[in-house]
Image (cartoon, rainbow, N blue to C red; front, side):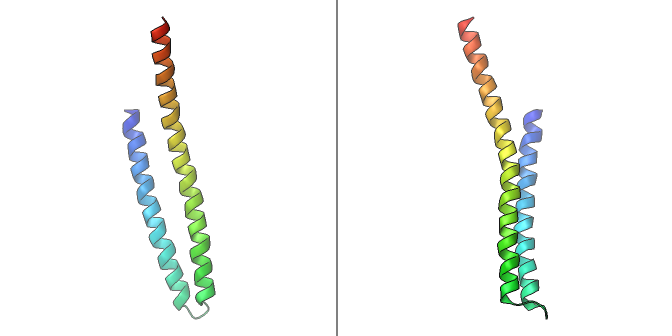
Length: 85
């Protein structure tokens, strides 16, 4: 049951990352064509948005990866303990 929730959490994170990419790109285009905007402001939106997405998605995937590593380590320790007993 835990694997079910972890797998779906990862799938939902993938969807949020894809939506974030779409929103950052479209936000930059909106700024590019707005009267107060311009190419520099649009580039700033794209760069800051990309940095934000990389950091937030990275932290989320890091948490999922830590869970997977902890599970594998526990299984390895159990295997060693059963072999010695």
